[in-house]
View (tube, helix red, strand yellow):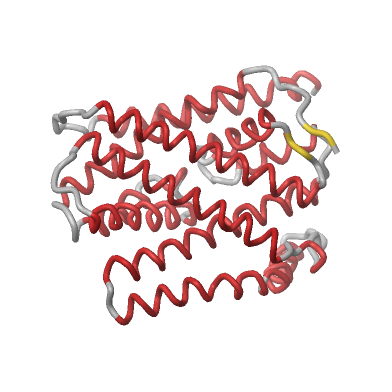
Length: 306
């Protein structure tokens, strides 16, 4: 048992990397088109993706600090986000959250605090995606319906902020159905200041992800670029990633993300290019996620302090 406690993290990393590698092997066969690569954009996209990771880590550390009154070190935050990222490639999608909860417990943070922090993380992460998608639609199409969607996106901010208690009630109801006791109550809601601070940070996370997607497009295509295409790429990335995240049946949103993004981009570029771009970006992110997650193989430091 003690051996398992020491080895589970290594086993989790190895299993996740295996699934990620298996996915790469399956998908690289679909890359039959030859490309002229523009290295400058490739490295710029990689830099933006690194900033994306740093911002995600900052958000998680802030949430843990607010919820559990624990200040995670950067290394601890990095390791926990890496664990979540690798876990999304395992069938079932919940394994990353479960593995992170186990790691957090070893660091002195209780189950309730870990669950609550994860809840706020996912809630704010998805809310930021909704707001950005609505605003991009409003700017991209400039029609009455799109302007209404953009306004609804902005109005969702106070609505979601005030709806936290009702979400907790729904969450507790679901927990009781699964045989668990109530774990969340209204005292667990974020203050308006903290909610808006983290929401803004996640908004930037999605923008950075979209810019990285644009960077990959410029790396392999770099033609007929315009502001309209930039907005379309960011919209396709945000909506595709969001729906892929919500598709619990698809590890890492595989297939769903690419299908949605390609469908949106088909109105702005040839469908073949849209499909190929979505596939290239998926392969690119899998490789970078795996490289960033290698931090899990390094010994951890003193990871928290109250």
